[in-house]
Structures are given as C-alpha cells and as structure tokens.
Image 1 (cartoon, rainbow, N blue to C red):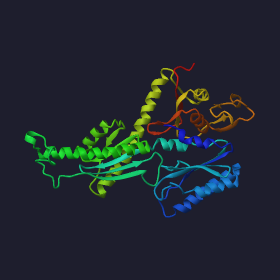
Image 2 (cartoon, helix red, strand yellow; image 1 turned 60 degrees about the vertical axis):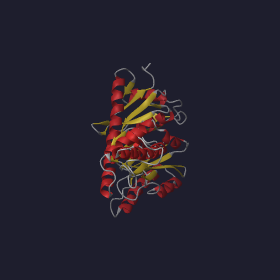
Image 3 (cartoon, helix red, strand yellow; image 1 turned 120 degrees about the vertical axis):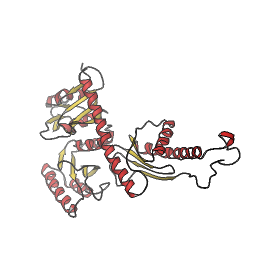
Length: 378
C-alpha cells in the first residue's frame, strides 16, 4: 500500500494530537456515547499538555466530514497548533479509543484501515441494462461515481434482416435471431465497458466486482480485455432484478472485497518469508530499524496489535531516523521518544516505502519486519 496520503500529516513542526475514536451510531444514545468517549480522550489530551485551540478544533470535527450517520465505524483525527490536519473515517471502530500528544502523528490505525479497504468498481449487469458504481479507497457517505446504462433490445427489430441496406450479412444476407441478439448484447456491453474503464480510472480501482447475467458478464470481460484493462474481475452473487438482487450483490461484494484484501496480504507475507530466506528481508524491530533509517525498506510490515508496544527514539530533523537509543539519532539532545509504530511509519512515509499489515491466522499480530529494496544486508 502506498503511504503517500499520510505525508501532509508530517508538515507541522508543532506537536500533533492524534485521536482514534469509535463513532458508531448503532443505538439511540449513540451521540451521547460518542460525547462521553470524546470527553475522556479530551481530558487525557489536556493532561498531556494539548493546547485549548487544538482540543476545540478536534471537538468540532467529531462526527463530521465523511463519518457516516449510522452503522459501525470510527474516526481518526489529527490536529496541531489549533489546525485540523486530517480527518479519516475508519471502516471499523478502533479496537480501543486512543489519543496521543506527540512530536509526530500516531497513524497506525489509519494505515491498517486503509489497507483493508481498497478502491473498487461494482457492476450489476444484464444483457440490456447495467449499473456501474465506483467506490474510493477511503470510506465515504456514498460512491464516487454512479451510472445507469440502458442498451438496445430486440423489440421492433427484424432479426432476419437486421438494419437497412448495406447492413446485411450471414448466409444469403440473412441473420439468425441468435446472431442478432449476440451482436446486440456485445454492443451493449461495449458501452458498459467504457463506463467501467472510466470508473476504474476515477477511483484507481484495484478490483472489479460483477454480478448478473453470465453471458453478459462474459461479453464484458472480452470488451474490457480489448481495452487493455487488466484490473481483476471477480464474479459475485446478485445483480439486477430488484432490491433483493441488489442487496445480495452488495453483500457479496463486501465479502469478496474482504477475501481479496486478505489474499493480497497473504501474497505479501509469502513474498516476505521467501525473501527472509535470501537476506532480502528482515524480521523483528531491531533488525528493521537500520533498514528504515538508511531508506532501504521497500515495504514495511507491521502487525496491528499494540499491546506492550515499545517506545523508540526519533529525530525532529531527520524523519527517516528511528532507533533504540537516543545516541542513534543525529542529535541526541533533541531526540524524542514515541511508540514504535508511529516512528517506523513516519520513516516509511518519508522514504516512500510501502506498507502491509502483518496478520497471524487472520488475526492482528505484534510482528514487525521489512522487505528490502536491495539484496543483502551489507
């Protein structure tokens, strides 16, 4: 996963307040519950020295932006020097409400959540009609783009001599009804393919989910292949045909997206294990730190489990540096301590490294490692 979307959080030289809060709205008293949870975090931030202006701007942002009106979700907010730096809606509530006041932002919950929610395109398709919806990487109130398409059908067409003069073919210039129908369905899906390609480009979709008529889906695959669109296409249950079919489609797409994300994480984990055997990766916190500090990490791998997370040292002047001791920094006198994940992710962001969540048996782990840009540890 590309961490570039986090880079603006490191532009402030002042300390940063980071808040990760469950903002689910599944009960009648949800607003009151959110208020109480925030009040606890606000008191904690105040005790750490957070200024009043920063606390106020955080309070104004709670429940705003793309935070959904209902369902289970969360928010990650970042503010500094009285200015809101970013507000991210989380697809899942944080495992624990958390607030920090540090020289750098605490971004692990956002990175983990973003890695579990890829941009995708959803297509409900039959041989005449289609509904194309594009969803961005970040959770939002609704889709980024949505199109309803209606193609041609056989009503009013002479299937034995399709069209007018100059448009005859087949044996003795005559078509069978099956040939005409197939040609028309191909034409319809060609138009759908154009919209799908545009939707993929709009959100940077990493996968396309399609539900509906099997033959129309086959034609759509052919049309997308002709347009050299190599985004994976996965067929899911549901499609067109009323609210029930559409509901099944969305439920199936959500499950398929979860499986697709897990398969991607498993692929990276397998690559990581292969490269460990050839000194092209490192495992554990201490072996990973010099690789990050030397900008040699291609992909940082971190588990989302934060219990007993160690504190490490960072530099205010050299953001890629991270070490076990203050003497590992460029200036030990200005070095500061922060949670390991916060410092390691800052280093990865500022050295343009990627990120993947490490899991164990499908559950969050405490493991840390890195796949290297260059072979050998030198």
